[in-house]
Image 1: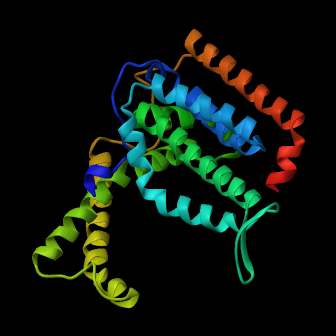
Image 2: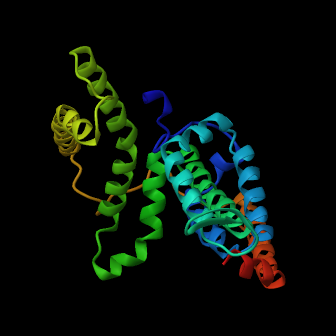
Amino acid sequence: MARDITLGQYIPGHSLIHRMDPRVKIALTFVFIIFIFVASNFEGLLIMVALMFAILLLSGVPLKQYFKSLKAILFIVLFTGVLNLFYGSGHVIWQWRFMQVTDGGICNALFVSIRIVSLILYSSVLTFTTSPTDLTDALERIMKPLKALHVKVHEIAMMMTIALRFVPTLLEETDKIMNAQKARGADLESGGVTQRIHAMIPILIPLFVSSFRRAYDLAMAMECRCYHGGEGRTKMKQLHMTNLDSAAIACTAVFCAAVIFCAAKFPAALHELR
């Protein structure tokens, strides 16, 4: 299990994506998420998928790392795809009582599955190529206007980054506890749903205890280093946009314009999918 942990991991590198301003990467991630839903037909979706694969290659991160990130949501993708098989009109391919699979349902299943996979892969680029420190600074800079409303921007950004950073740690801790319980003779894989839930209790209790202990140790370490929030703190590394960021924004704008063009030019595809 620990070998397949990818959420929240940072993979150091010197690729083009690594060198981009983290604020730009966060903003472009939100743009991609929006336009993956704006893409209402296969033409527009293909454009966003092409952009995604280009970014995956430019990130310099091995593709197997991205495919590992899909393991956690593989069941969700399959379950959602199967459900969408039964929604859609068109030629009936298979029917049993009130359930039927049509060619429109198959298009729906493929469309939704590709959309979910694209969201996960593109979101993984942000965490794989951005260090937790840069991510915290970028979130704080983006939310800086909220300070006028007396929102503690620095603390919120710090909590979000720490939570993301400790996801792999907690998953690894869960793996260790499960192995320890199995070594003591615990049966975690057989029996019905009720028995499996009952078998998880010896895992959840040590995990909660370990989580609170880690949080306490982290709080003590921050206090010992005189951390009292973001007021008056300076940045060792200043964030600056470069020509690379401008080129990334321009390239993304071209792809987004192409998606909008496809949505307007091929409305029939949108009608068929719905």
